[in-house]
Length: 245
Image 1 (cartoon, rainbow, N blue to C red):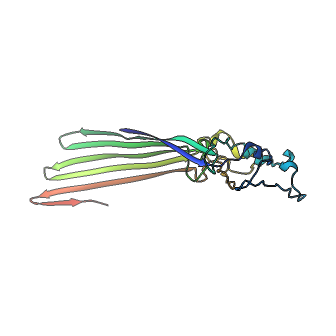
Image 2: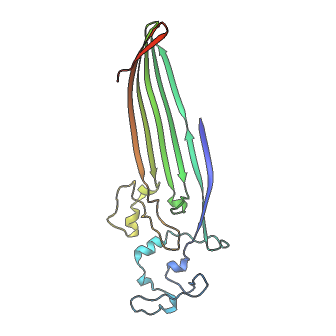
Image 3: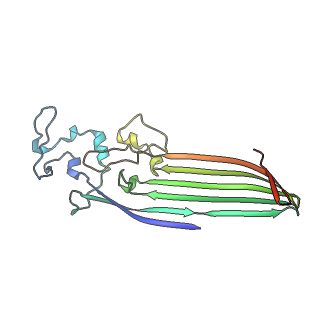
């Protein structure tokens, strides 16, 4: 069986005005609407016209600022941006079982069950709400076994089995391996593994975070092997079983 879920997700936040990213704070005001004066930390004097010269802008900050979207919300109270995306969850459940009677006393059973799941979360709660930085996760649950049943006598049975199960998780930022995002932004000496080479997660006071979720990638696999055997003897109204460990 299969299941497909689509959930609309949204989150409001604040993004800087394009002129702020260019160093133009001529229209900057505080929460009470009063003008904010930007002071040059070197000369300790206000910048002329409240504008920071382009030559004084850090190139790394300028590059990171390009990831901020344009405001799209005009009546959101303190917010000026709303991020929207469709989260998806694809769940599948498959199973195959084969029974074979090799003889009147010998029976084999082979079975496999697997559950692949794919999840896409474009608006991650508590992280960057931008769908571009959304996370994807692929998981797999697998169970397979082989069982042999031998009828020694009408009152005695031998049963053996071998089982294997596996669980995997691959939660990543889908764009991570496209290029060295950190280096392109000006960060050097960081992780070069394509699976984890995303833009560093950044929080800027008063604005929405940028960057891929800093708790991923999460990639792991867990395997389990189990072997079992039992001998059952039925005598009158009694049943005796032996399970060698």
